[in-house]
Image (cartoon, rainbow, N blue to C red; front, side, top):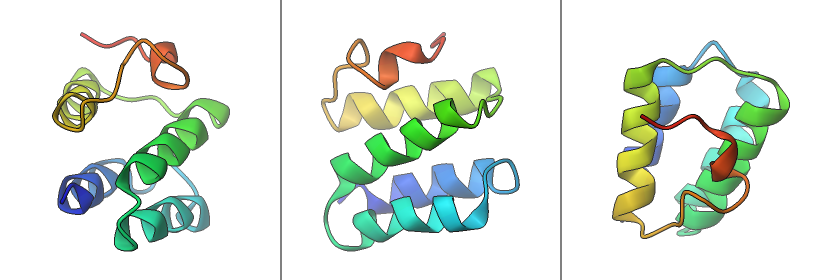
Length: 82
C-alpha cells in the first residue's frame, strides 16, 4: 500500500546512500513490510549521515504520517522535520 511512496522517496535520495543498502530496505517494501522498510531506510540515512533537503524531509514526514508512524520514536526522532 505504501511501497510506491517509499520507492518514490528512495528515488529522491538515490545516489546519496549506497545502492545495496537502499535496495535491501526496499526489498521489505516489496514483500508488504512497509513499516520495516521505512524504519531500516531511515536507520541507514542516520547511520551514514545522509543530508536530506527540507523537501525530502517533508516528503518523508508525509509518508510516516500516512503510515501512522510516530515521528518522535526512534529512528525518526533524529530527523529535523519541518
